[in-house]
Image 1: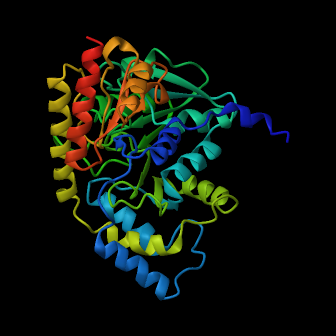
Image 2: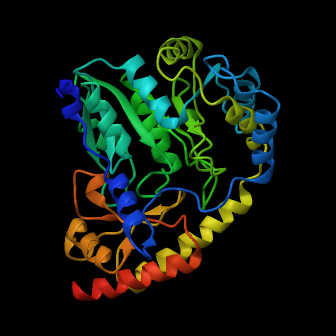
Image 3: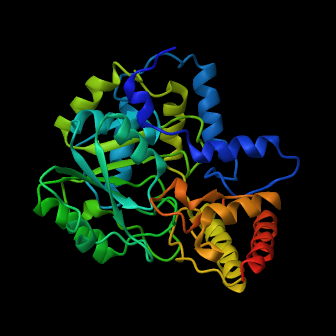
Length: 368
């Protein structure tokens, strides 16, 4: 079978390869997948069941049910962010795909902080857009100075992701402001991926949209209420943007799943404090364990990841040794143009985290 040329522009997901490896192992200590380890809250499950049993299983409007779109705008207004319009998408991945299709042409350049969420690189390449990687090591803060060093006449968009996947680092208020003002000053689209905004351990979440009214915000509920398989995301922006995304969505995803949209209205009323506190404790547990083992890592301010530097400086090799001890984490090269680090997901029971840290410490001693 002959495939289209664009098929050669993307790579198989390194995260999915780890997922498949875990399925073949007898008793792996899995700290690899970015998937919440708590169940969907009962009110959200009940709302979805009620929608299914009540016959609300058909197509919704392409841009989402009016109730959910209004609820999303209300949710952000309560945080001091007033957006003109919203569209419900098939997860944040669907949101990113629609935005890239609507806003970028082949040959355009997008500034992407490195390390990065794997989808940015692959989707941009698939569409013939050039990702330009902005090195943020070792503190993983995106700054205006780092961005300026990579800006060219072809630069069209800046992506920021806070709290960040894979590092867990949250942008400081000063840097969030600086990035927002950089994009505004140069007439660049600022896309803020805020899927982990419910998880903040050391202070309130700071969105770049506070400092740049033209910021496009992507969000969703996959992580905050553990509905990764329900595919609910959204985009917030101006009405012209939402109209464009709606036109494209009607010929791609059509609409997000209708029962999940019904349940999401309920989910947006839930208080994430208890879950956030639980992940803060897990963050502290894994960071203390890594420090005791002599590993260096930027302290995560949110999400549920930490991105340590691998002993010996080769994350790929170190992860291979961890796999031999039945510990699954993800090589940093999956998320970066470097291969010096690796990603741990602490979306796991505390006992598993302790077991994983013990294995890391054991293997790290071989590299001393």
